[in-house]
Image (cartoon, rainbow, N blue to C red; front, top):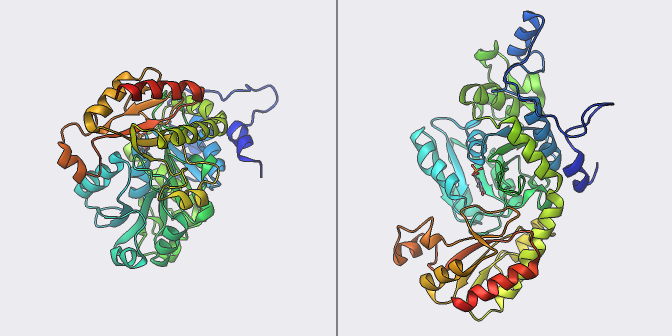
Length: 425
Ligand SMILES: *Cc1c(COP(=O)(O)O)cnc(C)c1O
């Protein structure tokens, strides 16, 4: 197999003689046929092809195929956002009456989705500490548990999940493991190699890498055998009457069943597709993902080491630092580096952190993370500004905590900006 750097550039789109070198944007809602019989076969899933871009579009599928290869999966589907990817990845195998187990340290949007919106849909979630004991883990499983969900590297707390252990425990209970691999990207970690069954991404972050297009993706490893648990996963083992009784694993195999069902049912009915133009932009980002991730990590490591020794910084949160509590797990799963996002506690509390942010010039204040520009966020005065210091503490957010998403600029320029801003804090 080609190396990951080559896949970033070349996977997915392979032009034939005389065809465009760059991925064509097929900006068309619909596709023309000369026989209605042929179109009927597409509707019945008897033939592969395109007929309406709410289900499938060639530009989007090509980019999904690239990400599928990057992760080492068997099938993938782009979605309109990372939120849509998280939702579809779960709802495809867990509907009303189902239960899921999720790591408590996850992206706030995923927490809201699981704890509130999906609960309103009749799906219950148990949130566990990041790396629970076997006993805690085993006790969380119920007869209606359908899956386990976690982030490789959590946003924003930067905890590292022991993927191999999570996969073993989930499999022991007949459940697949879904990993949100947004922060690590397949350049730094490939969860399927550690036993994860399904991977999701917000492609809005490093994959796009330029803050240009919102998007998501779901990738299947093809390893989970749904037919072994017909009672737990009836949607994948019983006939789908909306397609004349198709049984997905029978028609599409272990490698194709999960994603085909997701496209054929959930995209058909929910329509949270990515636009072909966004997929094109995403593909441009992917072509340099390997170079950018390396620079993000190099810059973040240098800056974390500098901040760790700075008198105006109380603490630094970066799993690449030897003193970090997730350092050994980070070395196991992300030996080349984690990502560009780090955290720091500014000496002097909430006011000092605010003064520090206001003094920065190169680093932009933004709610975004994980793109080429360095950017900062002070949760206490932005995303969590309605909370007082005691409430912040209860939510696990320190008033002096600043999240820094280190970009790919020259590291000396970022360091100089941090130095002058810390001197005012
Ligand atoms: C941003 C993010 C999401 C949500 O993605 P959107 O593209 O913003 O919908 C999900 N998971 C993680 C880890 C994220 O950082």
